[in-house]
Image (cartoon, rainbow, N blue to C red; front, side, top):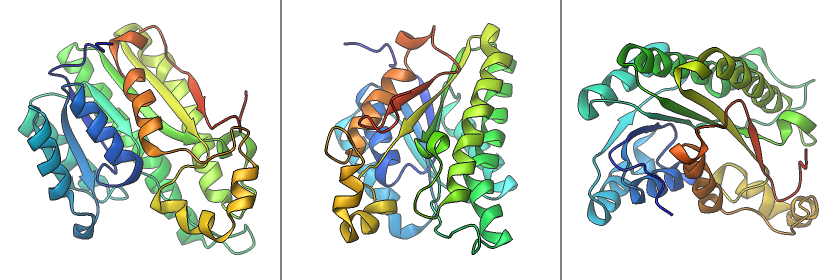
Length: 253
């Protein structure tokens, strides 16, 4: 199926590893030019750039970004527009998953989670929407949320769950504001996925995690990314304010 994404431009946060990397690869295969963020040099963003350039004809830019910092986020957006000319798609993928029960969470850790998982999404979405409105262009925002947004945390991640729940309400609110301007805003709710963020926990207690998934296996990032790319395509232009359940049956709502 041709998703009609050729020559569009996407910003993908946290694009050098895990799910973000799979988003970059999947979007590139559809002919989308990409600006993606990374945080540390040991994520080797240059390797992903080389892979995309050697296998597709799209333009790709890696921008070192501290998503907890307002100026860094503004620099990301400005760099994307300067290098690639436009932004049609925003994938708010980056997030952190700190551990700690409520009795143990420090205010600093709470703020860190909220700044990256929620405040950065608000700010980048604001920059993106204002860009689309100024250019009179349609646009698509996709946020990565979690089943924890609806079920809460069971393993000491209340700050993560709260940030992801906030993301759902924010997306619905923004979707209502910009629907008539042809900007759609949607979420994917993921469950347990094989990424570095959670792999150690899965390896330590695989039965606990897998037993919670009705389909009986952990998701692979490329599965989620392929669904997400469909969600930012013109094929879903009538869909906005929605959260798609891609949890292997954990959510079922």
